[in-house]
Structure formats: structure tokens, C-alpha cells
Length: 201
Image (cartoon, rainbow, N blue to C red; front, side, top):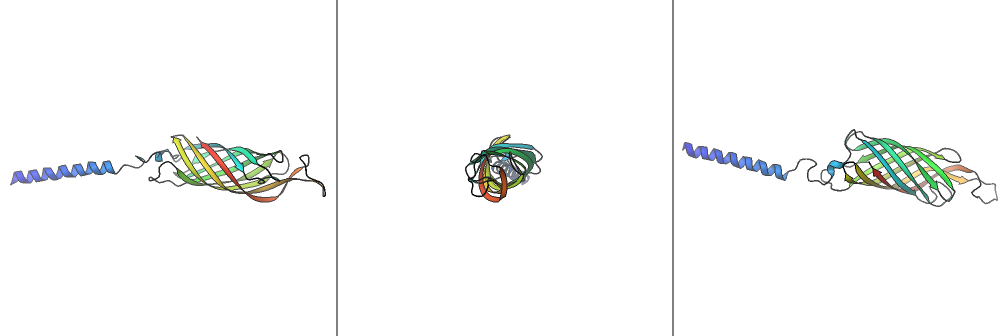
């Protein structure tokens, strides 16, 4: 009887240990087997962005394409929120004018252990718009985007959204046609749209 009891006890302990091994094997820890989930920036980590962007025609001036580059730098203040600041240069080709945005930058990443290669986020920028001629203006942007990580310290962010900011025009006398020699001055505000590709490091 004693031998049967010891055998049953040994069998129960063996089955329990086997079940624990199977459970640990089939239930991976956070960040395991989730394909780059661990490569979202960590809390307290410095993050830099550099990229190109294009705004819809007439976003800053009388018409034409607006193309340039921006860079932003800051910290992940927790596992989902980035806060920083940046600057850039936007060329208004139609008006032969340049603008320098200087802005605060923020992003919120939607993180999940069930995600795989892309991480949706929302972003916002707010700051000043400094033209090479004319008065200093303002610009704000809201964006939705996707973050695609390539390694522990390098990723690509694709963002699109609306922007609202100072609109500039060539000033000319009544009855005259504006030309590129006329003064470039702020004239109200305008909604537009933009697209941006950032490389994160």
C-alpha cells in the first residue's frame, strides 16, 4: 500500500512538472516571439527623427509644391509617449521662398504584445514658421502614422494629416500682377495636408 502511495505521489509530481514546462513553452514571456515588439523605443531613451515632407499646393503661398526636410529630437517619457522639439526647411518653389519651421513635437505609440511589424501612432507639431522674407507665422500639424522598425535603434515612420498655418502671398499694388520681385508677406491662415517619411535613430 505504501509503495502504491509513493508511486501515485511520484506520478502526480511528474505530471505537474511536465504541465508546467508545456505551459511555459506555450505561453511566451512579453517580447518573445512577437517579431520586433521589443524594438519600440524604451522609456527614458533618446530618440531622433530626420525625414522629408511635402505639403499640398498652396499650403504656404499662392500655389505650387512645397517640399523640405525636418528633424526632431527628444525622449520617450514612458513606454508610449515621445516629447521633443525640432526644426526644418520648407521650399515654396512657386514663390521662390524658403520657410523654417521651429516646433515642439509629440507622438503617442499604440503598443501591444499582439502586434507584429507595424505600430500605429498619432503625432502633433506646434510652433513658429520663419520665412526668409516677411513676418514670422505659426504652424500646427496633426498626423496619424505607422512605425516600422528595422533594428533595435533604427525605424521608419510614415505620417499623413492636416496642417493649419500662416499663409504667405506676394504683395502688389491694386491692378498689378504679383511677381517674384514683390514682397512676400503673411496674409491670413490656411488649412492644408502633408505627408512625411521620418527615419528614426
